Image (cartoon, rainbow, N blue to C red; front, side):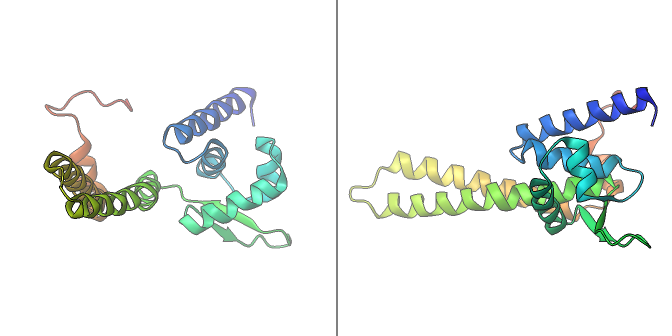
Length: 175
């Protein structure tokens, strides 16, 4: 790998990690996922650990988690007994997996929490009607948000790309 290519990949991994922190997915997990996304060949845990400067055990735990999400899959390399993994290289598929994971980890627990608080607020005597009203509005918002996430999950790439285009045919940032 050339020096400029190595620098580009390092910047990509760092940025992906920063995005992971902002999305509460975790820096190292996001960097490992990026490593597989941009890799041109399967990698093993030792390569992941060495590239990112993390412990082999940490790399193994993250690989297990990413495999559970469906963002990497094991592949066999003839003549090598170590387990190698290949990443998902479809940005839309990665988006859908991350969206689903965020929904499962954040939206669903929030909906459940709000339902419980709404029930408590309605059952309290005397009930604070403003609190009940705001809890219901917040619960309704998160229910709609969950439905939007679910709808995005079902859209094929074409309609999703059309949906994401800026109004009026605005500038395409990838050009």
